[in-house]
Length: 401
Image (cartoon, rainbow, N blue to C red):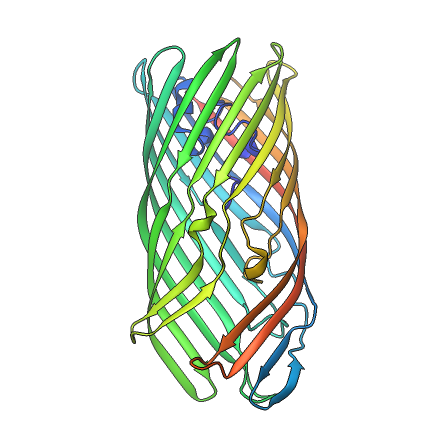
């Protein structure tokens, strides 16, 4: 899940996500928030992710024909599988239609992953290349019930593309590895809903919900071992998680506002990757993700009519299951520290900029997979230690008309 859908919220670690309601990007977290945005507003920006990821071999082995006793797989650490810079653009807009009705739209990429390991990676039988891309179009309406309560909701149209590649162990030591890969895509629908409540004395409570989206990826599968090549169609169900955000924005004085958010992610919907081949056979790879959550706190401080600064921190629990970890998703519990600012260039344009550092906890992986079934004639146990961190720079321009 790519949380970085608001360049403003990155600066306060998403602590104001559903309640701050000070930028059109709030539509992603709570569509009711746009009732705080008068007239027409547009926010367009991008976040640059600088990801460092390292894999250490803790004794990856293979067992099978010609491999008795069990032998070490060997190979390099795969290098940093992420690109030097990973860009993430977003764009959101809101339009006040009347005293009570607002229309909002957004373009975002809420889920994504792209990594490529070196060819001699010791974990190559687990993964060599992974690419998940989503593009999400959101259209929402908001209604101001009265001066205290606003509600909002709408639909999401989401495109998903996936490509996964891994090596297959040769049946004899020293032989040439095989390769298997799949690529598939789909377009599906989801929905969003939110409420914004004024509690008095400037405090606001916001609750936003984004639904599960059920994709049915369809595409092609390629399998090659030695001179044997197989190509056929594949279908892969993919249920991306729902997300619930609850935020509180509470002013301390006329210039300082404290913000707090708690978020729930329904990642238990992703229990396995199930491949249904056009030949009638199936393949399953277990992941058994767990539902996860995050807690964040932040502060905004107005320094002048033009300049607002902010900061925040967040603890974000990984959904990955220790028993089913994979080098495809080198993840761990994350701790965020962030800061940012907004500077009004004039009465119509505001420049937003943020920086965040994400500390990712070290994770140990011990994964057993069988090949050439049935029955298993080759087994690989991938043992690794994953570590890393992320730096991000984000900037956007908010236009108000």
